[in-house]
Length: 360
Image 1: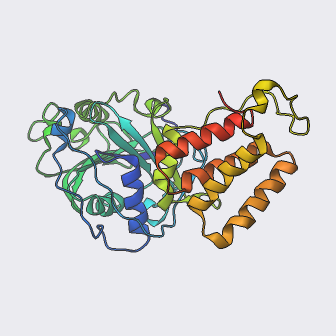
Image 2: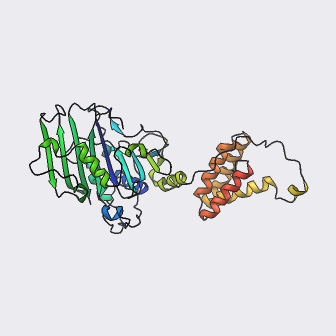
Image 3: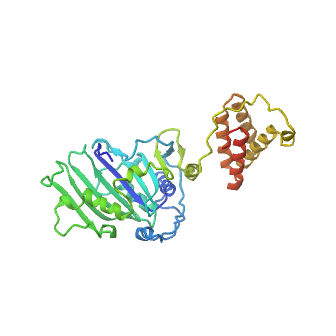
């Protein structure tokens, strides 16, 4: 990865991206640190790496400030401070990107911007909301930092249990004035990289030590942020920009990423030129009646009665105006919002796309 930045702050957890997003929203809504219904006790990260982890539960969310933005809204990974003065406290609503599952343990990468306190207030609060799961925090400085800052923290149940840090404000050479912190019980992930007693402050936490810890987590440190751009992953970009979707819709967003709608056909369907009737087509249901039936079923399962006619009228106007793809996207959204089974929703969406010539 490029190091044309002052600092990057990122963290890793065994929870899924949707759960982390819900927890962030819950915290920023000003609610208690943990959901009213606490998730079940969880196995440690080492068990997760060995394939003995359990299924993640769901936490509640309130009305968060952050919203889910379209893909590509945030800068490409890693989400960095370009200059040291660009603090951007994530705990006060700064942008956050969540990507997972990564590596053998199916971890979620959390990119954010943190202040310069001794601990990460963001990770501290988030670990309280994600009760029972550790959060592994890393700080790494790049070429725009006038000195250097490398850190590894472990957070669990709202408190920091491990801090290892080396920082310098006046250069990255060993002779610089380094500050060092080595507190709390070393984590088993550090077993292969622990420095000897009496190690100089500049060597308490280094890029090499960070890389070894990431490898112990089942991740390739040289590929970590490039991997976030691969297909098959869930990526949630959160910011306070207008127009995003509320975090309460995170599960729907994840489902859309994992099950994208079929691509539109290249040719537009000529709606105003009815197909010649044949013996075969005369036996099929009327096209208009079938489309109407699918739309009525969708709206009846998703909206109260007093809103259904208005929605159907608006959709009809879009179709008459020629905005077929836009109308279909809105129809598919309404189908997904309904209370029918997922199988029925998928069948209805597929048939509607087929009737408009957008099927595969």
